[in-house]
Image (cartoon, rainbow, N blue to C red; front, side):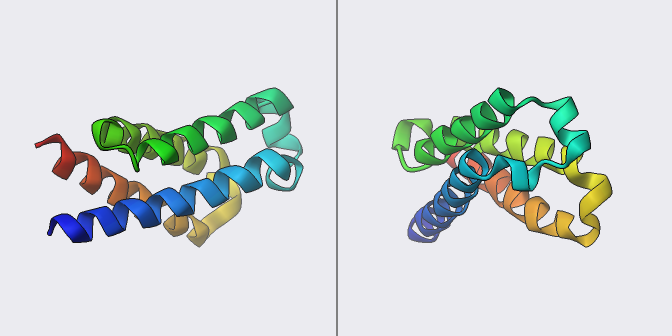
Length: 109
């Protein structure tokens, strides 16, 4: 079970690192006019950097549960930002958030 949990952590870290990298470089593609008025450019970049840091934290044994909780919160905040535009696309964010919650729970014990 421990090996499967580490594999899940690595996959979630890669998923979030790719998303964070894309967000930092191409934030204007993600943010429509409404989202840009809510969050300015530096906040989008900080959001992506914070996501990348939490993703790296998933790979560090002492930070796993905190990083998983932080990433889950960021993912759920992202769902809130894009809820009216994504429709069923919310599943692409909700499933990783749920898996991050499982990782945080299992590593906390």
